[in-house]
Length: 208
Image (cartoon, rainbow, N blue to C red; front, side):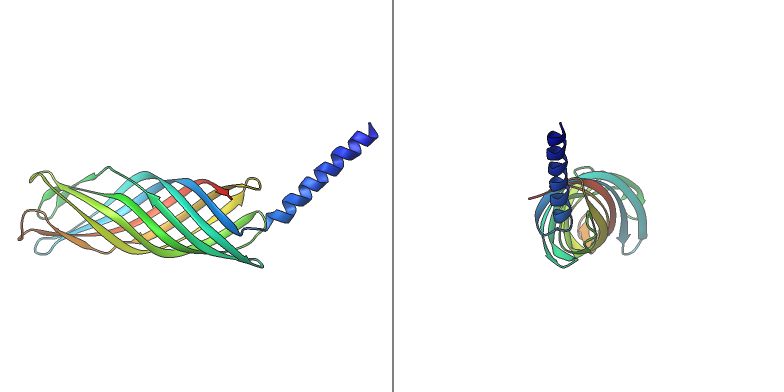
């Protein structure tokens, strides 16, 4: 019985030591998914009639993947994210068209990521560039117009180890898309869209 107890204790100690040795190792590739809550500030400007501001709230699922390198406790790497959203929000009182629908479609980002190794935790910051498909519709004129928008994105977050392979992630990001213009009823009707998006996300990752 004592021999069995000693064997179990030794195995537990060896397992704990292996986990502790790996706890600070964040180098390598990883992938995962998050659930995101988005808030978009959409500004629509008609050059001769004024501007309309509105907030759009929506949820998305995002896939992410990247690679880390580590030098002592400094961790840095690259990460790509992509998500899709198909709904448009109805915005009323827009100068010019009156009622107008707008929404982000497929959007993604390429990021540089840097953080400090805290053992089983990795707080990090990100900076990069984002791109999105802006989908619009003017119901009174039955006019669909879509275009690509781009802009810088910044964020902060943290990864936490669940075990040697699984990670729990939380982050918040802000993206500032450039303005783009659509002629919603011909060459004389121009509406410029500026979009600022903030999203808070939580999800799971896997370290390869």
